[in-house]
Image 1 (cartoon, one colour):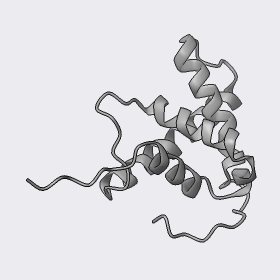
Image 2 (spheres, one colour):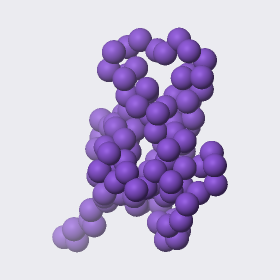
Image 3 (cartoon, rainbow, N blue to C red):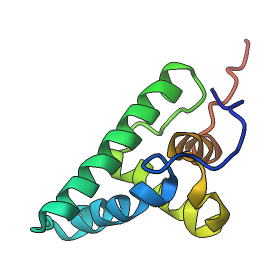
Length: 114
C-alpha cells in the first residue's frame, strides 16, 4: 500500500481537504466541547473516517503497530503533526500521507527469534 506514487490528488481526496477536520477533532478531544457548526462536524467526521479506515488497513497489513493504549485521536495528532512538518504534502492523497505518518510514528518491530 505504501508504494503508491506521490502525486497531487483529486479535489476532496487531499490532506488539505481533511486536515481542518482533524484539527477540530483534536481540539474537541482535548476540550470535550464538540463544534456546533454543521460544516465543522462534517469535517470532523471526514477526518475520523479517513484516519480510522487507514489505520485499520495498515494495522491489518502489519505496517503499523500502535501502542496498547493508543486512541484514534493519537493517530489524528500524528497526521496533523506530520502535515505541520511536511506542508508540501497537503496536495497529496490523504490516505498515502496518513499511512506515511503512522508508519513513521508506530512502525512494527520485527519479532526476535529465541
